[in-house]
Image (cartoon, rainbow, N blue to C red; front, side, top):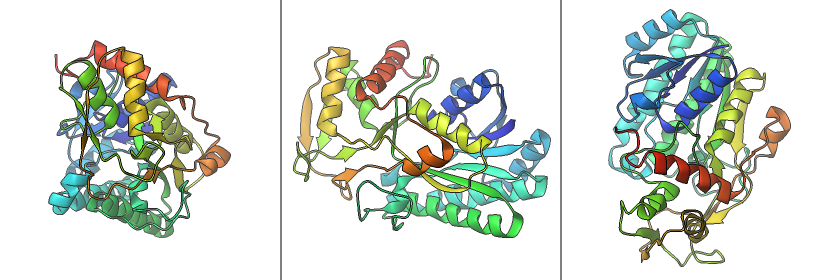
Length: 323
């Protein structure tokens, strides 16, 4: 297939591009390079630099590409930032995304796999989270993602677009070529690895009084390769609608820090800091629907394997994609 992939210079988009190309698909990456890295775009892909908030640019790019399907990763993804600047998140993650699906209608592209988020659920009523859990976002990031899910449902009804929404939490790990390089970095595994590399003095654990066995928050960590494979299965299948992606297992912040210590064999000082507002005790996804319908099975549910892949990439790229 020929795939038009937005956000291919970002973390998840770069790895999915690599996996698509490895399986013989053709990929056109559309990215404004604002927060991604040109070096993260697989050299076998064609890169088109452009912004989703420019409807003319996205339409021209898609007409030139003539793709069979779209994968949409391009989005701002910092919850705290969305609380400070909601307009930026709605403009890019909702309006910009709508420009993308409008271009699909104009060009006649039938299928889109959308990188959504379990943040659309807000504080879930039950754990593990299933796809029928009520969606009540508690920040503009989750709200904008949910808005675009609803937009796609209307385009399905009116224009016959076939949408798949993949909702997931903590992407982590790396391939040999591509890994995680954000500025600022907010994810726990790369931040602990930065301490192991002596790039940061300590790891901050935000709260140790949660209702969990060791008092720290529990999250579902999913390897980036497993995420990429799920997107490809969604792309090449016929199913539509929402799918949660996760391992069904939860690991606490303290467990993550201990595994990084074990893998790196480095001293990692930790400091207990106050809780961050809005952090639930546990967030774990049920992926039974994805396993049944998409025939998807995570291959890297072992946290040790996930951390080893991230550690190998960060050792090889201590400054990220900067040469």
